[in-house]
Image (cartoon, rainbow, N blue to C red; front, side, top):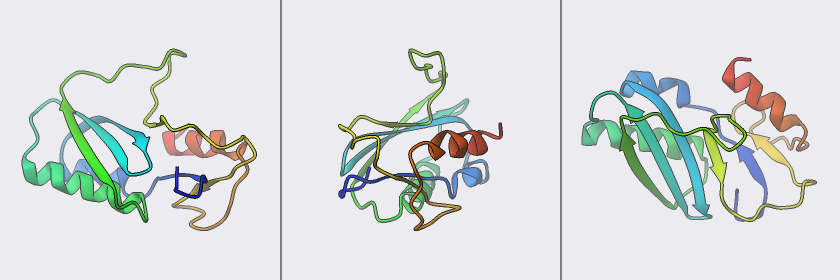
Length: 128
């Protein structure tokens, strides 16, 4: 979520994670407007340079984000949500009303999308 209350779906750059490190899974959790937790799952420990490069890729995808990115590494699979689905992006902020827009930062860099379009974007990103 951006400071103005709008939401966007960061997409650009995540496909390059494999070029940086053998990431099996990742999850981005926004705890505050200036605080993001970045969970990385890898079978092997990541070097500080790999962690820095992955965080830089995330920061670039979150265009305009200048807050803190906390990186947590694990070898264990990240848990599914209560609905039984894996969520790669979680916003723990009180969200805006459903009428607010989501902006897809890759395909629609500045175009506003209705909330209903989010499921289509998430499905495209997941390759479904």
